[in-house]
Image (cartoon, rainbow, N blue to C red; front, side, top):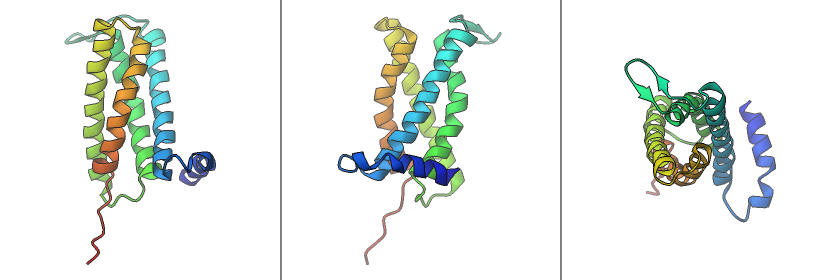
Length: 161
């Protein structure tokens, strides 16, 4: 599966060769696909599963867009980790459990950023929830890429001595 995904992604790379390195292109492809999956799951959860209704769990209540955000997270977290680990950053010398922990911390940070921005765009700017969710993605993607490249899946620099 890994080889198949790499061959498909790399097949589309040549027109972008002058604009970005292969790793950045793979991140854009994998991250874009996972983000699209997340947005679709959010939309379906918000509109068709939750019917835009408040979710009462007995001990806590969630606004429908917050519940939809967490529902989408449950699917996009594992798919995102595997795509980043095996497709985008396969050269990382960190152990898998360290990568998973760091990815989890990063994703929780991104989830928190998404939550804050989503509430801001919905409650302060009065955007539709699906539009607000798409807008938050722009901010979070840049933070996520830089964090994954330099923290979660980093590669130790070789000493030249």
